[in-house]
Length: 182
Image (cartoon, rainbow, N blue to C red; front, side, top):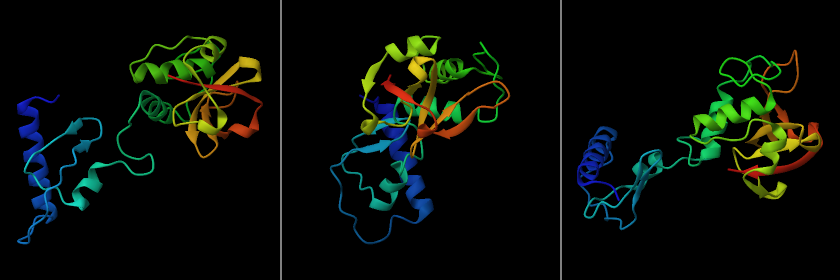
């Protein structure tokens, strides 16, 4: 539960933001019993505070944008920040990576400690079916010898091999073995 101070601060931020955006007008806005969710901050119930839909929509991520809502999405954003970084066998960041080093480093940015090797990553976490992949799931290939992070739209971010930087690639470009969620 959020502290009273936090609730008060959120009320002020919402009111100031709404006024600045011109969302409050002289006409009455029906009060909503729905809680307000601010990505990366929390969910708040603000009794008696009317939040117009256009303000609530600004607080809710659309299509995977905005603040990450899971450790996997946070890890994905971290991996995205390393697109173009060099591949170095055995490297685990922050400037160069091998495949499992990238996955481990990205999840560390999300506050989770994953195993170091792709084989161990393939056996950790919870199994996920291909049809249920979510942003940030760890996808393994080639019998567990390669791993990447699901980036949506059938793609992964991975550190593939020597001479190739961290990149976005189609899952279908390699023989997939499975996926894990952390």
